[in-house]
Image (cartoon, rainbow, N blue to C red):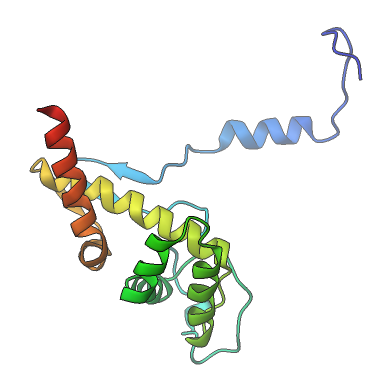
Length: 169
């Protein structure tokens, strides 16, 4: 391929892609107003239950990027387990821990890959921290998983605050 700007590259779907991109609304993981409402992003995040079925009543479904509230709550419960938290803190390479989380979700009838679990946990941490910071500054926030996440991440958030305060002094 030549790197000069005069060569024309034909892309069969250029016009269609340009139309799509021009019409797409921006995506954001957080809608911030006076009261915060956090919605999960599209990388394996919050959604509604598929076809209105609960996982216990349906055949096993393939891993999808969307997470129902039920799946998210199950993930939070498993992730919050003392042994899981200890393992996550104890290893730099913790892929085996997320494999365990994925396996436990599978035992509950949810099909999520270890990478989907890792991505969801990362998203939950970020959303919790945003809400925690807003709450700390006296602003109203509304995040449906906040209280469950506070049980897991609350001490960590307070430790970060203490570190920040010492750093400011």
